[in-house]
Image (tube, rainbow, N blue to C red; front, side, top):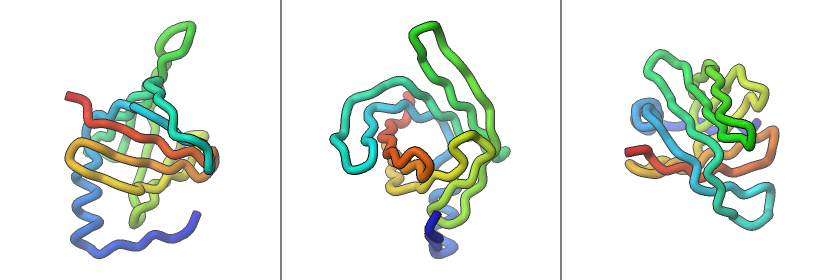
Length: 110
């Protein structure tokens, strides 16, 4: 994981902006092609926890983990421990997972 420091203002924007529920709309593994994929929902809570909901062929699986932001990096206690916030807009979030070398494209749930 490469350090991704931010100004105090930008760190505060990400800390607040990431909170809420985000639905996956696509993913890209490594340098591969971006593909539509809607298997996951992330919900980031103000208390530093997040819920990950995954739709599988046998049903929905839900996990709850802790997270903290360190610049653009997100450190979690999940099996895929480290993410990077590549982009955060009002209605979209792009996360890169260091372990899986996968980029997740998310839309804010309405």
